[in-house]
Image 1 (tube, helix red, strand yellow):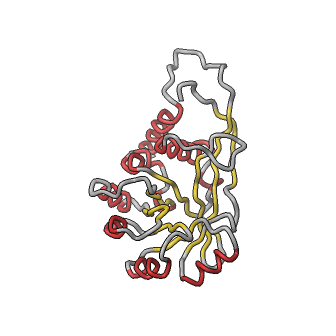
Image 2 (image 1 turned 90 degrees about the horizontal axis):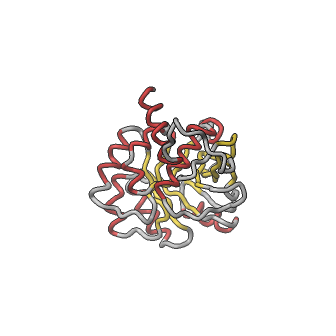
Image 3 (image 1 turned 30 degrees about the horizontal axis):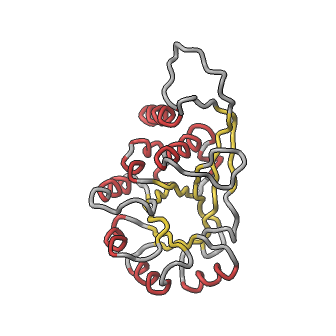
Length: 234
């Protein structure tokens, strides 16, 4: 427990920046709410089994511009763990969190409830031999690993499948029947994302995909909590 508290403190510094306790708190910055967005993940029985957790930097936008993936992941973790709370955001459902290579290698990941979290490797991350050991170590801790925004079963993706449990596929950007058969043959859960219409949903159900996500079910919903102060250097 003490190590988790210490990591949470380090995560707070990573997100908001270090402060000098001898200096009076700044009054120049307007307070902001702890905020993130979540979008449900549905199963074939139309039950919500989890939420993708998304970075948001204002109380207004349904989307946000991502300039630093590691900082955005840290902010989502900080708001989830320290500000809003896992129970308030997820309850007993799974949380899906976008991660770049730096986030996967970071000790900050350890503040998360491992057996409740699916860590999504962003499509911009190179699937290298150097990344694989981090995935194995995280799986040993109880995390599940997913590949995000897969558009085709490239040789690089296929070779990396032993390190993941789940593959999120952009609909309708792939040879669906072929990729589904190959992924199910290797024991992977297949999640269809960007499902925007009932026709999309019926199509991917017929193909045999396992989980579903998209605007057809709901757009990302903002989750907010009490005000926190933001350091000027953050």
